Structures are given as C-alpha cells and as structure tokens.
Amino acid sequence: MDAQILKFVRLGLEVITDRLITILALLSSGGLACWVMWGPVWERVSTLAIYVFFAYLVVRAKESKHEVHSKGQDS
Image 1: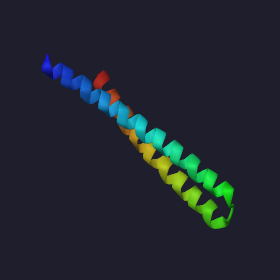
Image 2: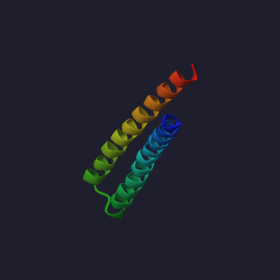
Image 3: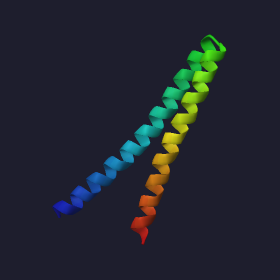
Image 4: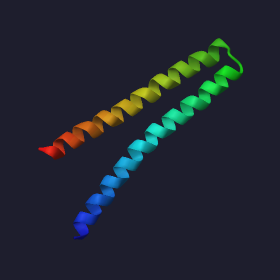
C-alpha cells in the first residue's frame, strides 16, 4: 500500500513540475515581451527572440520526455 501511495505522489510531482516549467516559461516570456515593448530597441528584441527560442526548446524537451515515459507505461 505504501508503494502505491509513493507511486502516486511521484507521478503527481512529475506532473506539477512539468506544468510549472511550462507556466514559468510562458510567464517569463510574456514579462520579457512587455519589457521589450516598453522600450523597443534591437538589443531587447534579439534578447526576447533568443530567450523565447530556448524556453520553447526546454518545454518541448520536457514534454517529449514525458510523452516517451507515458508511452512506456501503456505497454
């Protein structure tokens, strides 16, 4: 019984961390976009582009890892 509870807790933490990374990436990208619109200069725009690109890669990598993990559990 304790092993089942631990399994559910571990699964819940994985879901929370996945969602938290996605939410933080979206919020920080939005905040940085507001900062860029406040004073639009090319340095800020390039900073936003680089940050959003890498934030997208991190979220995509985390989601694809989760997708492969969940496919393994279905078998």
